[in-house]
Image 1: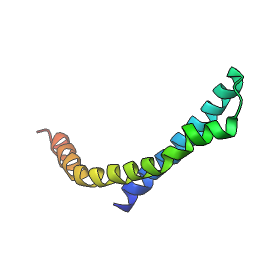
Image 2 (image 1 turned 135 degrees about the vertical axis):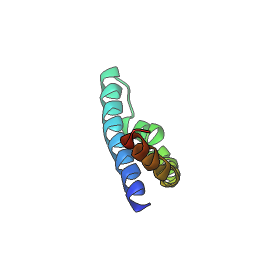
Image 3 (image 1 turned 90 degrees about the vertical axis):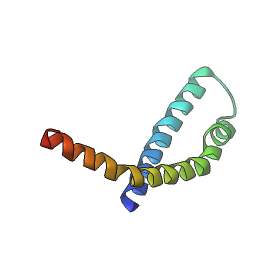
Image 4 (image 1 turned 180 degrees about the vertical axis):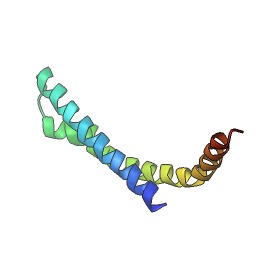
Length: 79
């Protein structure tokens, strides 16, 4: 379970790092004002919700992974 949580949180960090950088670039190129407030309003306030969703996804993955492993084993055996 810990590995699933770490994977989900690593994906979250990568997503926010790239997404926020892209947002800043578009915001600056568009000539808008108030970059700091925009980053807070459009990006940062969603982080707590996304952390909860990442933990929920890890919980679902924990339940689904055994079924996937069994299916892969069957496929490898030729069934």
